[in-house]
Image (cartoon, rainbow, N blue to C red; front, top):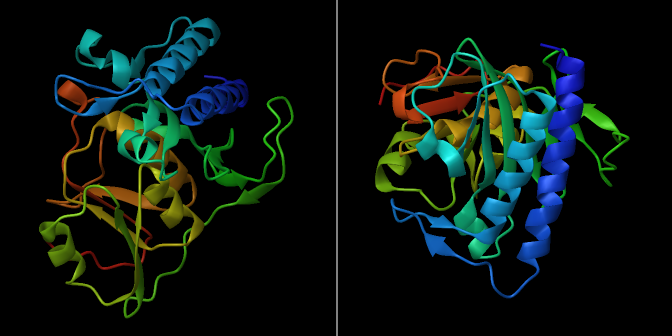
Amino acid sequence: MDFDRMMVVLRRLALEAGDAIMEIYGSEDFGTRAKSDESPVTAADEAADALISAGLRAAFPDAVIVTEEQSATHGQSARDFFIVDPLDGTKEFVQRRGDFTVNIAWVENGVPVRGVVYAPAKGRLFLTRADGTSVEEAGPFDKDRPGTMTELRVRTPDPSALLVVASKSHRDAATDAYIGKYSVADMRSAGSSLKFCLVATGEADLYPRLGRTMEWDTAAGHAVLAGAGGRVVRFDDHAPLIYGKDGFANPFFIAHAPGIALIPG
């Protein structure tokens, strides 16, 4: 796979999808409806999905493509595939909280190795470079000419004063109880895949998720965090989180900077 070409395509598609999302974000009617699992979907999810899917198919006609909005048409995925969440954090979008992202990742042999996370309402763009290292790009996000890149590296955590990030919309008592096992200096909430990126930038050290997620929710953020030196492991046995599972559902997991002695659940 030509990763130089891939990352040019993924960056452009994420930015174009962000434009489509923000156009609908500025309207009065999001066209919101409930999917079969009662989760919300909007016209923005569908517009971004169509744009990214068409762009990936045109650029990589032989690749397997899995997207949230078209997941019902997929069986078990291949070991190498694109996986897309065109609008992660739909609840944040509907409530106009800004913590929503466009997520596009390439999974190779079950591991997310390249990815883009774009938060258009926040003006933050995180991506892996062709060599797999991660950066945050500064705006104004010209689609043809990348801006200034800042290389990302996870923080060296202080076990006696950890920085923790948790879900804004899916926080529960079990998550709080687990976080309470650590010595925490600061706790913040964030939506969507931004939580992975906050660990990648060193704005947080630990992100535990004791709740339902799907592979498209996590793959791009996982790739960005891995490219910054971070890790994503299963909550139960601390083994690496693997992709390409039947049904695309994730187990509970922990995203973290190395140097933290993870506590059993």
